[in-house]
Structure formats: C-alpha cells, structure tokens
Image (cartoon, rainbow, N blue to C red):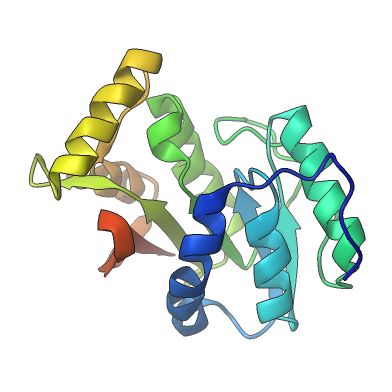
Length: 203
C-alpha cells in the first residue's frame, strides 16, 4: 500500500475496534454483494474491511466533504478493487444515490447525530436491503435506561454539551424505531470499551 496523501485522516478508535467489529461482521455479512457503510468518517474502516472481505463490494459514504476527501485518499493508497468511490450521504436523506445494498453498517454515528439520522437510517435500510439483509450498528448505548459504564455516562454528558441533539441513545428506542421500519432486532453483542454491536435484519 502506498502512503496516503495528507488529506487522509486518522481516527485512533478505528484501529482499536476494527478487528473486534470484523469478528462480528464475519458472522453476519453475505458472501457477495454490496455493503453500504453510512458515516464512514476517515475511511479507515472501509479500507480495512474491503481488504478483510474481498468478495464484497464496499461502498463508503459520508456527508462531510473533508471526510469524503479522506476516504478517497485512503482508497487511492490501497487500490482495493472492491472499494468503491465514496458517496455523499446523510443518514436522514430521503433520496439516496444508491438503489440497493445487500448489507448496511453504521459505526459510531447515531450518538453524534440528531435523532432524525437514526430515523432515516432505519427507513433507508428498509428500502435498500433485501429480505434477510443485515443492518449492523456499533457504538455505546444505554440499556434499560442506564449507561453500561461510568465512562459512557461522562461521554454522554460531553456529547450533549457539544450539541443538545446528540447523546448516547437508549437501545430500546433504537430497536423500536427499527421495528417501525420492518427491521427486526436479531442480537446485541458486548464489545470492548463498553460498546455494543447491535444487529438487525430486514423482515
């Protein structure tokens, strides 16, 4: 892999969590087709997962032009044939620049976006996925209304100070929104650093 340009951003959390996330994705992703990643951020997850799952087309996306440039820089350095050019997508978009996906993943997004992004994510996943297609979410959650760790409570407070529309979501509210959009809750997997993998399936 060539060295990426200075436009390539590095988010340390991606390096720390990518292997654990890949272990879960190995169980749930289809053997072929397109994986749409909503909120790809720096593009480091897309780079890693496109190398980890070479039989899947990996479609990164992000609404931030700076992140789109970073995704492009990482992709250019690696030249993975299954890593698509990034799309500009906001999870709450009504019209999507993609018509179908075989899986959708969204990592560390819904707590740093307004609730309508979660609503849009569920609506769009239901429209894009075939029956049985997986939606994978990763991040911190409240469970039964309570934080899973004191560090998550502190993190939640800092998020809400930055933006009153942000914050660690109640898992039950996320599941309810998914079910309103014919996305069935499948399982929750405890992850390192007090995060959760939450898996849904298109009904």
